[in-house]
Amino acid sequence: MNAPLHLALDGADWLSLFGHFLLMSLMSVGGAISTSSEMHRFLVEQHHWLTQDQFNQSIALAQAAPGPNVLFVALMGWHVGMNAGSTAAALFGVLVTMVGIMAPSTIITYTAARWGHRNRDLRAVRAFKQGMAPIVIALLLSTAWIMASSAGTNANAGAGAPITSAVLANWPLWLAAIVSGLIIWRTRIHLLWLLAAGAVLGALGLI
Image (cartoon, rainbow, N blue to C red):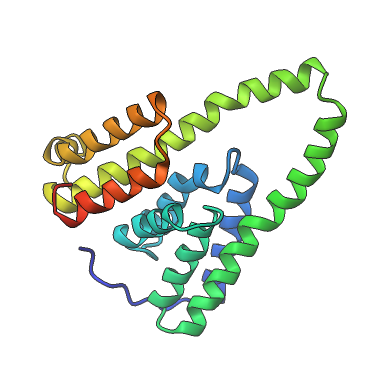
């Protein structure tokens, strides 16, 4: 478990946080979750505003809860504010991150969707849509890699251990991920059942 953080954030820090999520909004092809690897680099590795556990918990809770999964961004902002020491700062963190991630992408998506619908038969538009699919998949895979490998490092391999050692030390987690992926691919079992199974395995200490 990561030690709690005690941050002293000034106006420049909050502005930097807001600006970074503005940039993430412009990169969020396939949804905000596809940019979470860059969020991890910025929040956990570069500035140390979140612990690894807080980062993982934000994504896991937002995926499990009803509603849009972009709410993991709000949870990250909440954790940053709580690490800064107050509920008011946490609420401000939610505001900063959510406005940052939502404003540019909402405006661009609305404008582009209208234009794309009007020109949906153009060869360039169809080619763009097909070309973006592998990029989105790669971004999602990078998120899965960061969460799984970091969980392995924290749980069993020790801080600073190579990713290969973390993977080998935490093979049940990787096995569960592979099995879950195969089930999603080959069956129609609802994702909530898989989330519930993962929660049970985690509670029992099996992964």
